[in-house]
Length: 79
Image (cartoon, rainbow, N blue to C red):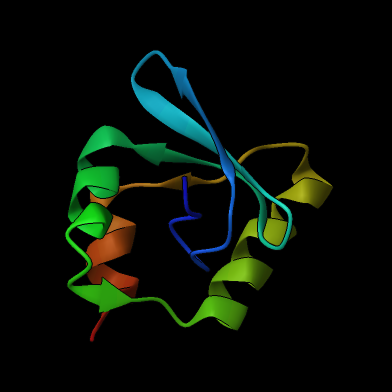
């Protein structure tokens, strides 16, 4: 599968109410099923460097960030 942020090859794991994505460029993050469906429509793109910094900022906290519909609607740019 492709990373929802940078579209590189990534690994996706289903975990209860969300998916966990492990991307070699962006790092590990979680994404809600609704956000994954929205991003699967390929109607927009992220500012990839900004989103990668956002994901990496959570590493210091020992948490996996969650991409949800609110974040996607605020950060997604039209194609």
